Amino acid sequence: MKLILGIFLISFNAWLIADSTLDGAKLTQQYCSECHGKDGNSQKENIPKIAGFSSILLFDILDQFKNGDRPSPKTTINNKTTDMTEVSKLLTQDQIETISLYLSTQTFKPTTQPFNQALAGIGKQLHQDLCKDCHGDNGKSAVDDAPILAGQWKQYLKQQFENLSSHKRYMPKRMKRKFKKLNDKDKQALIEFYASPKIQLKY
Ligand code: HEC
Ligand code: HEC
Image 1 (tube, rainbow, N blue to C red):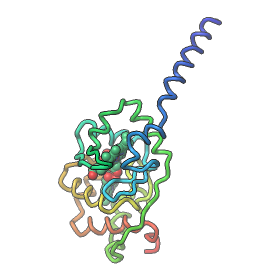
Image 2: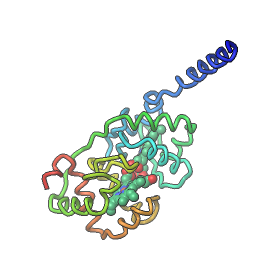
Image 3: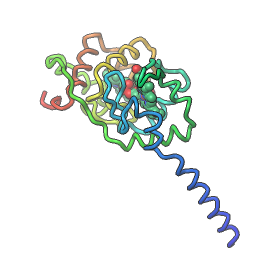
């Protein structure tokens, strides 16, 4: 019995040591923060905020980049040029899991950006009718493993609406059914709405 307990304790210690090398904050600092900020709240308009997304969604998106299933534009930062596919290939599955868990515990900080009020009002209605089920009330929630949209960078969202419209990016079947009902003006209205998170509840 003692022997079994001993073996158990040794392997438990080994597990703890192995696990301490998987530090989410440190890994994020090392691999992600130059672009996404140390807590996942990117300060750059072409780079998404990813704080507070569910760990399942983050893990899944990193897998899509790793496999080349999602467009991966190059970014130059501090004289280095790289992209999400290259970055995710540097990481093991365990590291990706650890980073995803860490970022999911951070708080998404929405940014209010210049927006067109009349269009934003139309966008709010469209969102509540078609998109709320998964993206939450006013696009503020990540509970259904869908990205937070309210207060995301407008420039980034514009690019994603284009990628989704031209089928360059994966979307769930149920989202596809709703998304294809949108015309160009509807899409612009939704983007304007997501850019207005601080005041959007007043409509
Ligand atoms: C060199 C800059 C750079 C680095 C480093 C970087 N990213 Fe990114 N990331 C981007 C850009 C740019 C995009 C937007 C790609 C696009 O336009 O589709 C992005 C997109 C993402 C997305 C998609 C978010 C969404 O809303 O769909 C996730 C998740 C993500 N990155 C996670 C990470 C993680 C985790 C790390 C560290 C392991 C990391 N990124 C490192 C530049 C970077
Ligand atoms: C069935 C649930 C569901 C519905 C309904 C839905 N979405 Fe999504 N949406 C998702 C998921 C999940 C993703 C992430 C897909 C991925 O990259 O793996 C996503 C991604 C997105 C993105 C990309 C965001 C980013 O951070 O890159 C946008 C924009 C978006 N949805 C807009 C909409 C709009 C507008 C509607 C309504 C017309 C809508 N969605 C309806 C689940 C849904």
